[in-house]
Image (cartoon, rainbow, N blue to C red):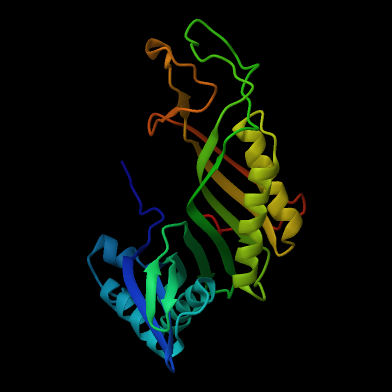
Length: 286
């Protein structure tokens, strides 16, 4: 039997980094989680343990901190591009860099006081290779949304194991994970993020849903319509079931007012929506 080394990468996962921009009496905070992954000339280290071509993961961590001091942390996509390009251009043995960043929001409570935002987490994944090609995928996760009406589910396959009753009025709730691929470099990632986020929310709120799949497509379609700088949206929507509680044992009716919010099991709806002329994604989703 013969074997060979397959695709591989190495890096430092989840470097927690907080940057405080002290611009006079009013400060700004960026709270991020940075993960770096590198690939290239790694055959020797795997086959013989020769580390000559390896950039230590501790060095990758230190680079994130040093770049925060040298360049600040503005838009996470721009910071990720800085890091990825640095790794590839500074070390010949590194052919490809992947940088993933999560950003945790803080709301201002004073010139130098902040309250942690309990909402969604902003994300990005950036790739850069030694041919000079870059890809940027922005996104968010844990954006929890709910419609109290305007959702149905009926007309599905019924077999001997089906117990779910059809409904023409239900609560529809989900925790949105969304990723969107930029066609090229975007002039303002901050504005693009806000436009895309709002498009997703508008579509969720404005779609009379006969299935969560229909809502998923409407959300992706709206984002692509509003934001010309992106070409593909991928969504994961867990169906956070709200079950009507039977109050008849207590002599009470329940006209879709009292629910049990079940956390598991849950339906999971996933899909992508893209422009017909979207360029090849290459390594963007890896």
